[in-house]
Amino acid sequence: MEFFRKATNFPFMSTRKLWYGLSVALMGISIGSFFVRGLNLAVDFTGGVQVQVAFTSAVNVDALRSGLEGAGFREPQVQMLGSSREAAIRLPPQNGQTGDVIRARVEGVLHAIDPKAEVTSLDVVGSQVGDELKSGAIKALAATLGLIFIYIALRFHTWRLSLGAILAVLHDPILVLGAFSLWHTSFDLPVVSAMLAVIGYSLNDTVVVFDRIRERFEGSRRLEPVAVLDQSINQTLSRTIMTKVVTLIVVVALYALGGLALKGFSEALIIGILAGTYSSIYISSAIALDCGLKAEHLLPTAVKRPVDDLP
Image 1: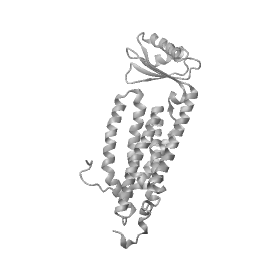
Image 2: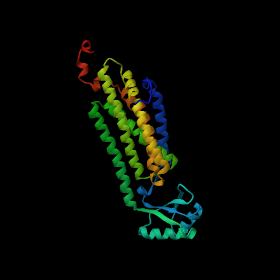
Image 3: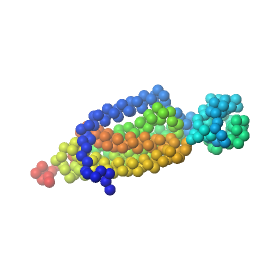
Image 4: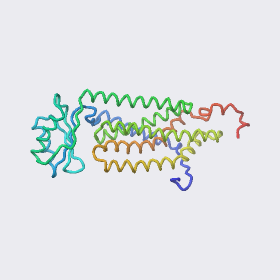
């Protein structure tokens, strides 16, 4: 099954500098926002208490926040969920207090507003645990990128494709981080999981394109590298678009229907899938080309044959 009825022949490589400029601009905005605004780190990383509550009727956010402050909770953050009867409360670490004690204090505030209100979930994370999770997440991302570079270099016998793959893979999570910083969406462990999934998903598409590039070099050794790369991307374009569209349908459904628990996870996947589609087409192969990719880098024995012996 093909997405396009006719074989495509888009000149991807001839417009690569335009897409370089777009990527640099988007990454610049993302990095700038990251350092200026930072991330809205969830209690997974900062430590603290995350509470979800439900009321029988619409609740006033200011009244709920004032009630929490009156009960001795410092700087409570209150956010409405899918309806005006559900809210998420984020509290700083409550040193020396168990989850049961905190639950009882929160329920006291809720019952003063609505006697039938209830706590639907409560998670407590210590500040030390949060620091360990943050360190672990950074190490996981760094190890993933290092192993990807080694894998691509060993599989395709050239650092040019490895560099292209690494820069394309870096491009995607940076845009995800930028979006979460700009929109101030809560950044938690499921989001880190989504970023790792995005890296793997994007790498899979990149490897498919690289495999086709190697096949085209084997079958058309006299073609210029620009033509080989354009042909390879066009030949895998239908597969790329169809797999991404099908995946997006599922992820958008998660975003729309999964509730607060899956919002950040699905949002990161949506951004990452879109960015990964773009980077696997325009970034990875283009960087390899500008680093001087040629047939002999992928087929080191092929260039030793005389030209007259080539088919």
